[in-house]
Image 1 (tube, rainbow, N blue to C red):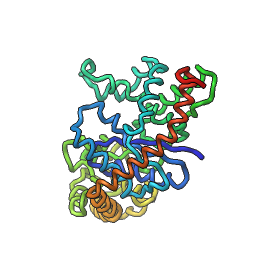
Image 2 (spheres, rainbow, N blue to C red; image 1 turned 135 degrees about the horizontal axis):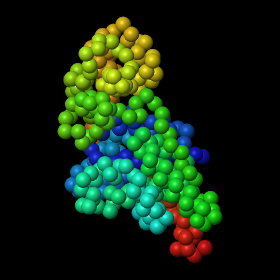
Image 3 (cartoon, rainbow, N blue to C red; image 1 turned 180 degrees about the vertical axis):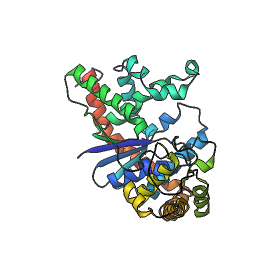
Image 4 (cartoon, rainbow, N blue to C red; image 1 turned 135 degrees about the vertical axis):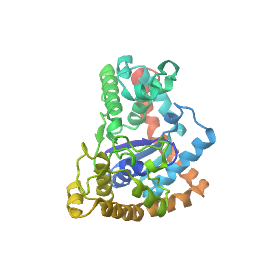
Length: 330
């Protein structure tokens, strides 16, 4: 069976971008693929974290997974740090990854900015850990956003280099899965910037735990433009295009179908319809998240069971890697 792997960082405040860009797609895939979904807490600590908040955020992501419809009996949900083989394989793959490949990774340049000399090694090398996350389970498909395609290409390069070095076909070359009208959800305040928890304005995003009144207020205040109609033009009208994408993704329509549905409507009427649709869709998810967050023992139990299942898959694959490299007697 084809195997899917994806991870979400435990940064807290899951928002509409996480839901439409990743989590809802995860739910669809669990019915047709062998799926592993990971809370990538090792990636999170490449920047300073409050320990208590990191634990809370990992539970929140898990609660978001479950509230959105992921079923532990159909997929594996686990903490990356609880499966030690992730770090073990990452070190081995570090020894096969040329510095030139890592120097091309644009996200390190963006995150380190002008403080590259002070940036930690983990931030520089985390694309190799990401490759290890994927390759550890012989993953065939990875749902990714546009901003992660470069890292998946690196994983494919590393897999190919390893296979060629030892003349074996151990790692498949994972394929990206990028689909949907809102794979990259933009800020409600700036249609050219990605929706993000790190934006200082809470009005830039719809959090999954926002109530109906908050959702309505945020869409009401969402930036648009002076043109009255509903038309999709991401170059001239990026904020309007973003809201059309969101409506299309929530309703399961194409952009053209959304524009046709509201062809004779003012943009204010479209915003009201979008608000109603978002409240209807996200309300049950947010309520279930809050219920699950109040039952941390249940959430922790799911993560422990998932880690055991993930380890059982990872251990024989790590043994294959060790034998190929010469770290383990055949």
